Image (cartoon, rainbow, N blue to C red):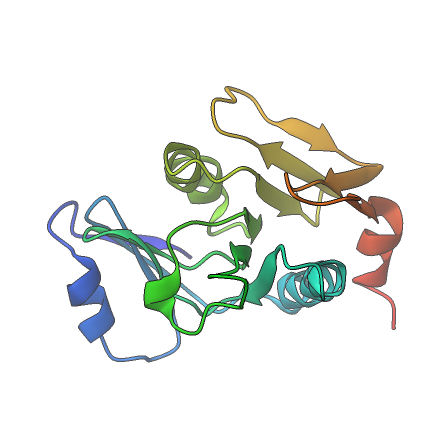
Length: 187
């Protein structure tokens, strides 16, 4: 279960000094969040979405897909590890180090019971405040994807397909959701 430690006072530097012992550590506005390892279905969803995004982005010059663990730092008191995210290129090439990261093109969280409130609450508000163009919450149990954009007060909810069309892209990525969710439980 996700736990919140120390209401205030945590910094990115303090989190980065913690030993890497398995749980995922994030700090948002000075509050430390520790999350246990994800479920197998969660990891399958992340892997399958990563492959779709990577294939779509390959050779496009738009950016690169990555999955956690990864330290995305927005301020000295805010470091998050989205399950999956897309970074823009740096001067026409993939970023080489985390310090090259200044913004995200897409952030994706696969909902877990232990992180659902945080994903829809503090993380959503953070991504909106940081002007991340799209933030998806993938709910494998409900078989839907919520899409948040900066300024949204309620999400769009998709059960049939999700479409991602970054500004500079000639064509969108379209992911049919029923086959995607079916693939999580079939070999």
